[in-house]
Image 1 (cartoon, rainbow, N blue to C red):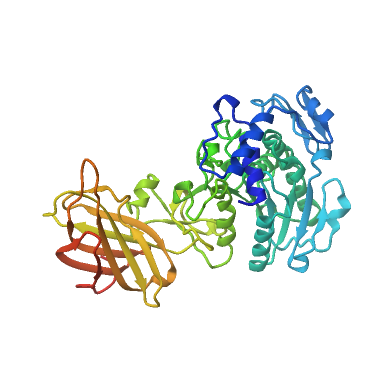
Image 2: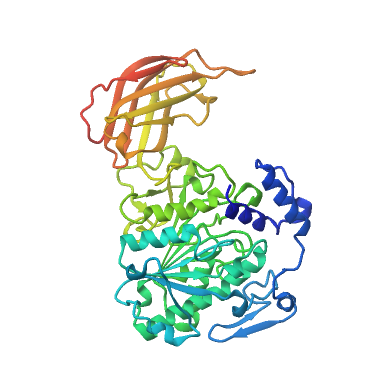
Length: 501
């Protein structure tokens, strides 16, 4: 785990009530030591160069600042009753990048009107605004990678918002409250770009991660309520849950904050100590829940689930990954292939979400490695009617024409109860080169337990593999095919003419 991840973990945990903290994480000794140190110092006053201001934040009733209005202890964050840090303390910067200065930023600021005369600003091209999260900065590698991907793919303006002094660890409460102030600053910058350079607000796309998601929401809220402007689009990448979720749309990012709000959830849940840092609630026009919105494949650390939202969005820029998604009643039904239909309206997670028809809650599966995308396939296996019920694990290995292989568990566990005549289904994401299929191997594994066990073999009638357009890529049909425990059988297609069936 890198330094940024460790700092992120320690900082987020500090607000958990000391009586409830249990250091039983499946983590390294170093992580546990940091958790304990935060536990011992969680009530400390913010130690910065502005200690006096920290005291005033909890005694003053309000604070007003040039161009961005007033803030109140009983205002947006009345559940915390603390004012945000001052603009002078946070020292937010706005770094502009274009294809002409991809690696060397120029800076603009709403308090410096002349900075908006910068000749590199081009209002004929889209504006992308990137807002980092907690324990990050505008020069963080995740943000720079996204900026570079955007400029490589599209001739646009990229504005990177750096509010890192307001996002310092381990002071998550202060950082959460500061998002409203920085959001208003972003709104003011966008307003001046419109007034001075003719930028249409409809052509502005604000992309925020974690706390930055709510920052983006506050920018959109302020533009609507105080400027009469509607932001074009907000992409919220795993918006932070603690201190936001459950407090209403005035506190967290919502579909009302822009003409289009798309959200990617990768660490949804309420257990901070388990790495569940993101919102569960659907708050956008489109809410994408890759892999159910939690426990992302290929992750080994607690922070990885949260950070994966950044990786997924960056991978979606360009034409490498479609990230097709499906509307479904819930993730379990989706994972079992219950919503994999020919007439399904698809969504597209990430950069091109605005181009797809799908709306509402959308599910998809991803891989655990860069670029995290592949081709969705549905495996269906029909157990023979004469087969006794059994407890087992069943898997398939798909082999493409060039030798690329994918291993897929058809059952959810190695002790799943399988019934006579049951149709087993599993949705999976495979490497694009697996299709067209060359070979399919299937394996049955008998469960051996103290109280019950599986049969020595299983009989099945068919195995079908469909792609995301419901085209049959493989069809094996032989009634009562017998498969002994731990035997791996290569299946030969029978009665297969391709197409939809």
